[in-house]
Image (cartoon, rainbow, N blue to C red; front, side):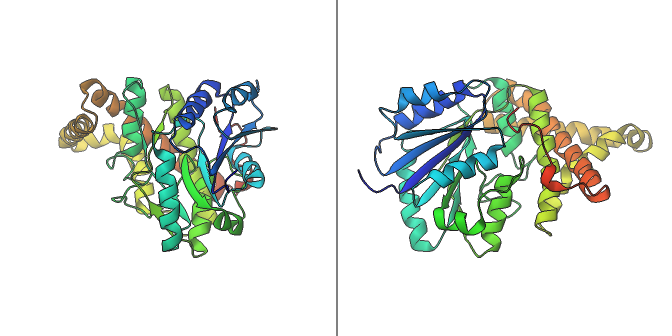
Length: 336
């Protein structure tokens, strides 16, 4: 058997269907050696081990089961068992395009030559996704809503790879101490620790994954609300990382709250809001080429901005004003 260069580590919780799709995409890769796949079940109600047994003949697969601790500790468990020189962390609701691993191995070789220890890539939607999932994808990646901070060459903030698609050297991972016991923001926390320790990161547009989004606005709101809270936790752990771009959603929330009073004194603001909404719909149409998705994007963008903004303000109240310990944030399951 050839030397293991890459360990693919996937935490999973109650996502049998998504995990099956991910394993299918791994099975279709052109590369069949030099890597391993470690699936860590984080206390699912029904163990997905039967799925991993199905793919073991075609994918070099190891299955580990543990009590629910959150995605960060689950990834740490996988890393402890991994034998690769590089780790590739993926979310269980992602799928790999054909040729992904071939690209990953090329990037690893290039990164070692350039002294890069941390690499990430974008997440995209696919034609068979629901209209809502496509609209959520727009809200999560558009420069009009997130400023591109999830990762692009045009990001308004420094690029930090996230664990839905994170390639990191074993040495850098171990030197940083792995993932912290946080259920939200644990991937950004790791990226920040690696970079503050002298590591170099790289955004690689060719290293894209297909990412299945939340399937309801309620679930999407919960996701971005918790992400907003996590930003306060991250700033306490890494002072100075809270940037102006992160505050925009909170100002948006305050603007919406006081909009009725603002319109009374400045009626022209209503026309400004209508123009801004039209501009977002137009931009979404250009990006998605779908009129239905572009109109849905107005709703998902509102949820993204308001959810993140409210989460950030609540996190500031809870962790800064009240002084709650950040180590115990998000005690409920990340995956819900």
